[in-house]
Image 1 (cartoon, rainbow, N blue to C red):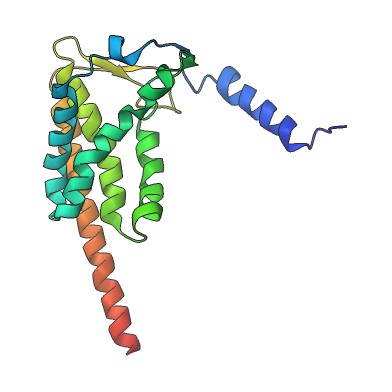
Image 2: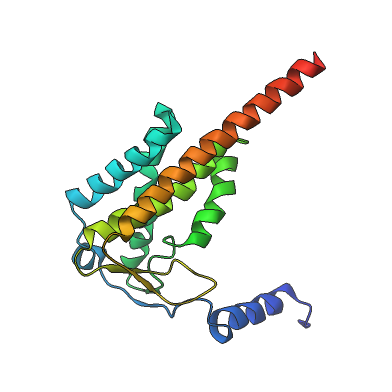
Length: 194
């Protein structure tokens, strides 16, 4: 017998409250085959990589530049779910919340206390959105960038891509500066203990 304190009951209630009554997420729908509807091309893949490399240059490190070049492509992994022909919410990785969540995950997985990795993970989302906007000209494209604060798809068009790309460069540069300060403070602490 299950009671109201049962974790399964709490999870079901929470899911219904969050997903349906609070309208935090857009409604899922059948997106379709990504090869038919997404317009995947060499230009699309190469563009994301080149934009990532441009942003990664702000890290002043080849390793970080390569990671920054590859990460923007990872955001399109959500297209793999569409091959299953099930209802889904597309482009959930194209949001500020996803960018912020990716920061600690990236630092944990690839290098603890390496703020450059965290910054690059945030910048990858901004870079990806930037190139998607540029590629969608002249009609623009829609993103759920404010999820979970708003379940509306936001249309971005025109020179919005410049704002996102510049923001990505600034985020990586700030990450580099934070990491440099952290390394200096760690070195000072180590010297004081010796």
